[in-house]
Length: 305
Image (cartoon, rainbow, N blue to C red; front, side, top):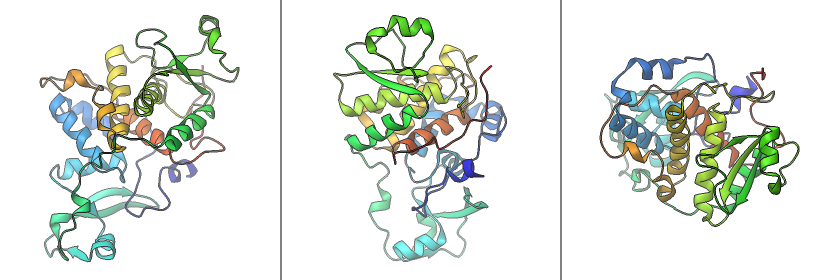
């Protein structure tokens, strides 16, 4: 139960969270594998952009909302509609179902299924474009990385092509001994010291996407699944989807543009990859930027071989 409760924000009544890790093939991935529709690159990016419009809701609930009505604009519970906007659901309004803390589900309503006071302008802003990141958020993530044995190093140039995150073996430590990597570190994420703070953040979220999606395997303290068997194409999609979602939900549109770029050109069928891992990684990275932790938010569910 503590792991599940840690997924829920404590202050925002509009917020929520997704399910626990569960089995290797959960309902989200089962739906994705079974439906050719969601493997269309156009449809997939539509889903990602839809989820990004609702940063107060978990990515899991974003999927639930998208499946029920991809045309919704802004949702809230009946209680929140009345308390915040003096609006209430219409007589024939169709409630939308999402997951909720401490209960099976919660019902929310789209703004166009409510009536009352004039529709406010603020909720209708799909993206809060900032393109500026608070250094405090970045430093909180760096701090919380250390709790998972992840060290972040600013370097003058990429260490190796596609080395967004590295599992630290003895050989790797010897190769990069000039970086003075701490003895406790299990993973390394290199970022370019010449980049802007926002670009560094995007690079960091990409590396965390690889780690939390399990592409580097697991250790004794890992909460994520061991997915070292994912091929390079799938691993790239999963890590870039994580970084893309995190950046978009933070209002960082420009740094997000470099992710998933091959799928922005022409509609194509995408391989079967793990949505479940992407959404868990997204949510955890977002939580890492909120407060400085004393211990990891999620405990180990797996043991290294």
